[in-house]
Length: 180
Image (tube, rainbow, N blue to C red; front, side):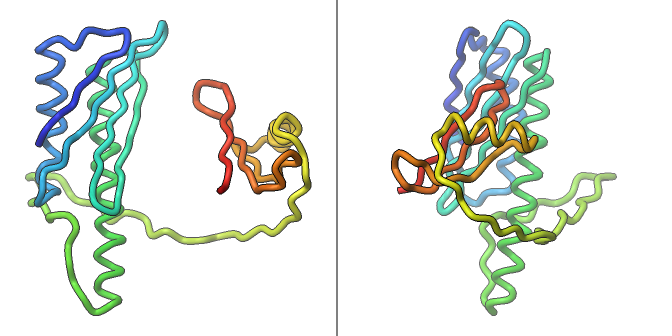
């Protein structure tokens, strides 16, 4: 595996780099080809944040975690990536079996002694909603989202007549997704 480790507001010391590589090397058992893993370590005034991106053919794995301790954040992000891989592997293998062909995107690692590999929850659609998209500007959409108490809101942008989505970010600010 190749690692691209960057630091924002932090110097990536050899010890920190080795720890990141050691922890993320655990993911190596899931891949038959070794992707380049991009790691971004950030330090803010109150939190340490780790962002990891694993680009794969037909899939992009990405996880981020924040914690008071950088080493704890690294441990948390590795756990999150392992859950994503197991969940996706289960989904891909199920679809391949249903089609009558079998091709694993991920290798099946041997479970560690004393560790049971829990089957990930099935993706189950439990509710469907339909609603009319009212034309409005971005600011009004953010107000509507906040009034409803949701973390995203779908609307028709009155300036472009396109369907857009506003969402609240973890940093307390808002994002906008525009369709093409």
